[in-house]
Length: 202
Image (cartoon, rainbow, N blue to C red; front, side, top):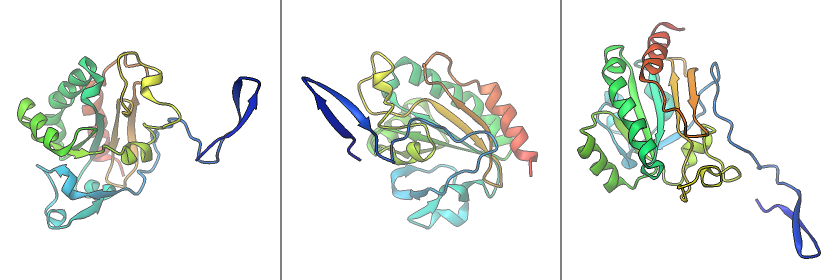
């Protein structure tokens, strides 16, 4: 992944970038959910389809077989924004459930900290450790070439951008939201509206 660097005097400039160079580019509305393998041992699963409970791993798209799936990133390193984001998901979750949907939150926390977060906020949806950010990268909301810390003051860790997706039973995205400037937390009403659309879309 090394870039080709040329030295000019005491200055450096990038003459070319590797083919793997890719900035943040989220999966868009009408796009297909990428095939992502999930390590079940890294998650706190409170609502998981019965046929997935016994396995040590499964694929992300398998979570949509029984209804719409909301996928959202979260990091405590987002500071106050992170808590606001989490509270919006908590607010939207009853409606998501009533519409037959499911919620998966991808977090940069270690497993023991995920358990603490679940207890602190009395969460009853699924959370999955994504410390290496591979899932966030596959969803296009994290890139080492466009780090959050280079854009937002007060964040120094490698974290994904705040993003939320709603996926229908066909594995197609019907709603996507990313806040690259950390200005507007995702709307619980928009999530609820998107889940309604996903629950009837083919």
